[in-house]
Image 1 (cartoon, rainbow, N blue to C red):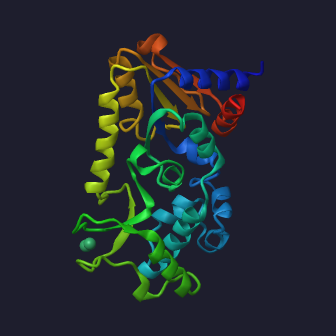
Image 2 (spheres, rainbow, N blue to C red; image 1 turned 180 degrees about the vertical axis):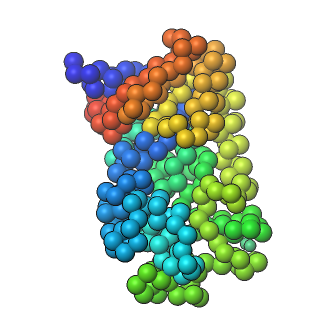
Length: 282
Ligand SMILES: [Zn+2]
Ligand SMILES: [Zn+2]
């Protein structure tokens, strides 16, 4: 049996054997879905070659963190970038994951902000720990409110000329008049009622299943923010009596030795693995 097929079978049987599945999703899943926020190819795919040529950006994130001379220009970039993410449909790796775990008792904790998780799974089963580009928040923030990004984006795109939006279209907080910004992790990130509620659902899911056979599944979780998924998953695996951890990553990564036979790792292309695992069950 080819190695990928063997690993796909291993993934399937762990899913089949589990009473409950806690999935941690990181940037590797975004890359598998074809979103590349960190390189040139990603800019071309997002249809933003014009920004690349004019401003010399090397990646989508480059453009997102650039310091623009005006809000009109900054929002022209944001509007195009957000519009790209909103228009993308749920991608194949996410759909494959859904057909693998959709019939099980599961919860998804994600650090991705590209809106793929909420396009694929029901709100009550996900926690977007670092927010999502589908929403805007007040930059102060003066209030605990999330607004849908899409109507703002549409208005800005309609009135955009060259690399600027109209001043009157720059998103403003209806309460304090200060800027609205994308609801994604930075120094003013709003951890308000919606965020706390989804985190609460995640914690409750874990608590109520602590004596069950639990599979902790790490998909494409990198090393940037170990405190959100990786370290808590290690500690749950150690603590829960019948937990098993499986980490899938393109760069390999190994399960910590102290977890012994409770932990395993698969080095594979996530898209290919999920597709093979799904096909194996049909
Ligand atoms: Zn405000
Ligand atoms: Zn407000």
